[in-house]
Every structure is written in structure tokens, then in C-alpha cells.
Length: 151
Image (tube, rainbow, N blue to C red; front, side):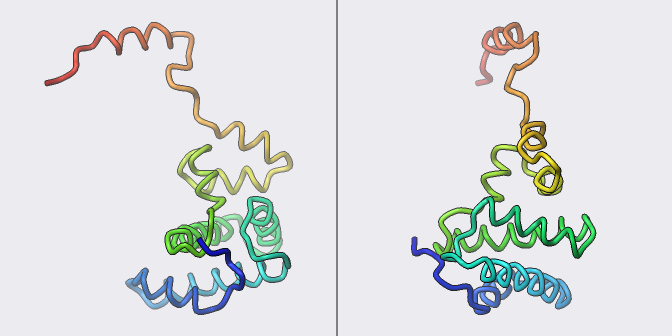
């Protein structure tokens, strides 16, 4: 994978073209949100890499300008874009993907947790319980092990 050395508008155009939105306004909305994210990444300096800290700073900057609902939409758009970039080999990792794997698939609770006063504690509360994590866990585990497999 090659590191992202510059964020050019052509990346957004390629993403939108490959996504094939049904409505022109949906594509425009995506483009606006993605360009805003690109400008933020470029304004932060550095090598253009997208880290969890950078995404948190971006979310905090967005909440000053937009409603929480709009911030969710921005985060979803950027998440899809970063997944696409990762698939193309333009980005080594998508921070949203890592958060989704650890704290659940939905973006809105993750964004709420990242914007809270104590993000680490809020994210920890999102973590799903361990399999058979209740006091009945060992009993349930033994029961499932005894069930014959369907053939």
C-alpha cells in the first residue's frame, strides 16, 4: 500500500463515480462532506494519514458547526470513503473500521462516545458483553456443547 501523500479532489470524484448514487443530490451531499473532510486533513499538516486522533479532532470541529444528526451523516460518508480508499490501497487503515469491530457496527453511538467528555469510558460502555458472559455462562456453554450438530 502506498501512503496517502496528498488528498486531491480526484479521489472524491473517483469514489462518487464508482458508488453510482441514484440521485444527483445524494452525490453532491457526499462530495461536500468529503471535501470538507479532505480540507480538515490537509489543514492538520503531517503526512495526510488518517488516525483515530485526527478523526476525533475532526468530529469535535464538526460539532461546533453542525447538529449531532448532521455529524452522524458526515461520519458515515467519511467512513464509506475511507473504506473505499483502503480497498484501493490508498490508505493503510480506516479508524472507523477499527472502532466498529471493537464497539459495534453502528456509527452513531461511536460518534456520540467520541464526542463525550470521557471518550475512553464511553467507548468502553459500548463494548459488547463477552460470549456467555453472565453468571449462567458456564451452564449455557456446557448446554450448547451437548447439543448434537445437525446433519
